[in-house]
Length: 259
Image (cartoon, rainbow, N blue to C red):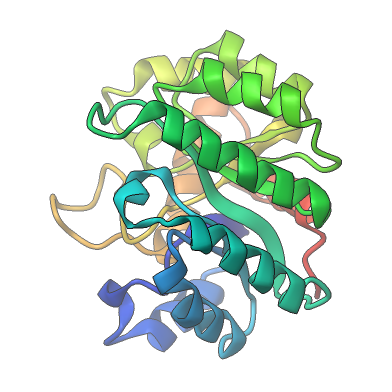
């Protein structure tokens, strides 16, 4: 299995990061994509992926932290992408996108930042990892305008079937994780059932987005991905082995992860 979205560089893992990675890989989660959120986090993110086999980096400016981002951060992102563009550990630009759920975040500034990062992804021929909350129509519009040479992943997809198909038409993969394991997530599970397996990927978003079996406030980790896979395979009516194999193939095809 491949965890297509996690944050193993976060302080929540500082006391046992190596052990979590070892346990996850022993359970079959062989590769993990660590998504960036801000310029300040990129150095520790890169150190995390550099010092652990099977981890890969994405650098980006997350819309949730809009107040922390400055114009020079885009220049810094270009510098990072230039420095590591030929490194096998760099796999995407992300986590980028739009968050319209949080009303105190300036929408136009979010859009401007998102579009500029899409331009960088196109320039460096990299896929994108996208955060989209209550913003699927605007994200889709930006993607159509950007005309990326490579597509990407819509992280933690929670939209409608119609929105999913708009992304799929653009070549995107849709990330599913802990949110879809909750009994109340019947609408999301209904969407999942209708999607082609070739466009689904698995993720944890750890330490966040816990699956249904973790207690409130308990840290999520890539160790949970096998059980997430089992739960979602049951929703789809297929074996967990089939879901694991196909979703890993999907991520590998998109990101060209090294062995």
